[in-house]
Image (cartoon, rainbow, N blue to C red; front, side):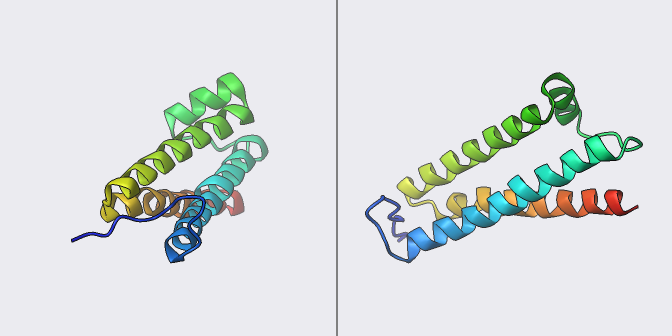
Length: 118
């Protein structure tokens, strides 16, 4: 039997710390790492072209704010999915969004850094 996670504002137990840690890592790697290295590539490395068509369209239309906005939407939708999973006691789906974002962010940050370094 699965025990539902307790993520209310009043909860100060290990589940809240775990939640904050998971999403903090996802925010740092996917949010900060990927966004900053992508922006550096787009605006400091003129020979590099964004491979992701959606990112290219958004940055062409809205500049850096478009990239940040798109990443924020993905992050918030992922967060909402994890919170919903927590309320239903689905631990697998609770962990999946921050782990996927962190892994994707680590991969793309590493690739971006490789392109920046040359």
